[in-house]
Length: 174
Image: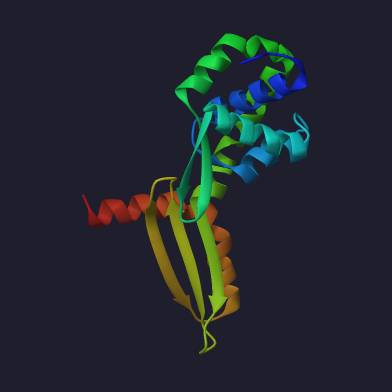
C-alpha cells in the first residue's frame, strides 16, 4: 500500500474507528461517526474510503436482514498497527474518547429494531427486535389498543430491550 496524502490518513482514521468500535457497524453509522458528528473525514471521501478499504481487504462486509455491516479484518488491524502513528495523537485521543462515550448508543441503534403500524381493526402492532449482524436474537410483535400505547412501547424499547431479553432468557431457558 502506497502511503501518501489525506487518503491514507482517512483510511487509517476509519480503520482506527472500526478497531475501537469492536463490532460490525452499518455504513450509516460509519458516516455518522466519521463525517456527520465529527468532521474527521468529509462525507464523500468517507463513502469512498469505505469502498477502498473493502476492495483492499482491510474491512469486510456481512449482510443480515438486508442490512450491510462492516468490520475490520486481521489485515486491516495489522495495517493499522504499523501506521496508526500517522493519525495525529490528538485525533486518536478524540476518536477514542468519542467512541468510549457513544459506543453503546451506536450498538443499541443497530441491534434494537422497533416499529409500529396501525391494523385494519384500529389496533396497533408494535414490532420489536434484538439483532446482531449474524442473526435475529429476539423478535416480538405486540398488539396494543391505541397509538399512544404503541408509541410508549416504541420509545421504551431501546432502554429496556436488554433487560427484557435477559428476563425472557432466564424464565424460559434456565
